[in-house]
Image (tube, rainbow, N blue to C red; front, side, top):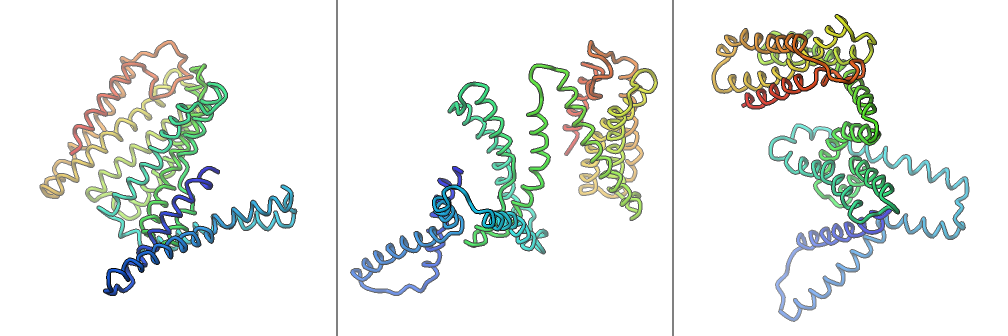
Length: 383
């Protein structure tokens, strides 16, 4: 790979030089004459070059790669079966061992990652998961890596998807070997792994879309909505049960959070019903759409209400918030219900068949205007 042949040696050189210089700075300094100082400086430079070259050559990645090339030449490009099985077992165990070491390093360190300590991991994650895929895709398109336009497009799509993958566990191994911000790298890798999972899923779904047939977009969007709704329904019900069993549902702001979770349950239930029940005409379709729209619109409103409640708890008092709870309930549940009724009464479907639609676009432009207006209102209302 290009990263193994070009990028990794450069990083190894920089890390080796930095490690040797840090060791030299920690060593005791003696005051000598100018002549002896020049000679000592030359000796230190020679020792630095030798130690850096030795460290790079003895690095497991470089050393084993060279050993593999030599073995490939010795065995004439055919590795013996018994040796191949041993190497496959060792290669499979590397990632698991590195991840196990990463988990051990994270024990007792998560609570320290707050405030300013999250800035650097956040920047690293954004650059890795958002900037790198875009840069990779654009570079492939600029250099025209394929034989033709179609081949270049396929390569750029693959480069974008490859860029969304989380960082390899070898990064943490090297950070441990060279003592380079081990806790910071560990936290960034854990967060990057969890954040990259939905990003990879969404990217893979978007890549499989057919550019020529608009009906394929609706099918893929419905499938994606159904999968996400199943996961969201299970998670929301679980959190809501925990709130009820621990009796936090009657406290503030947990009461507002419970309403937000309940709205998510309604939205997920409506999406699942929309994709599983075949009859979308008449009252069955109205009920399905009402549950979905009520859940989606109320979840947006309850998110804004939760932000307002937290602000009032900080600036005013708990009594002031308790007086406004009925008003919040009317806004959080009444306004979405009113919007759903208006959509059912005055909304009109466009030319596409009703059963092939996604519930987000079932009533066309009128529903889009309502959704965007509500999003802008909630965004402005958040402190």
